[in-house]
Image (cartoon, rainbow, N blue to C red; front, side, top):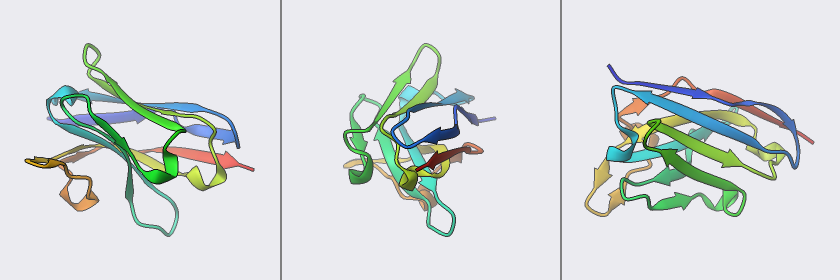
Length: 125
């Protein structure tokens, strides 16, 4: 049984930092694509950061220069380091195991294989 368990969310002031973790069981995070999504109230769930099985990473334009995605293969855990947080980063954050195509990782929410339960991030101005 696959489980993805996020932690590390919380409330911070603008300019602050948080580090989200996603501990996986029943699934090897280094084996395929792992994605961080977020969903704000009233908005669609969208991808934030993705890491491929070869370690290649990509970030959404809105978080470039502020967020970093990484993984610890020994701990089978995915991370999202979030710096210089802004109020618009307020959302529920989810980690997900996503499929891979020949051209790369699929970052559409509808194609995700497995979801975590989410962790709330709230940034106040």
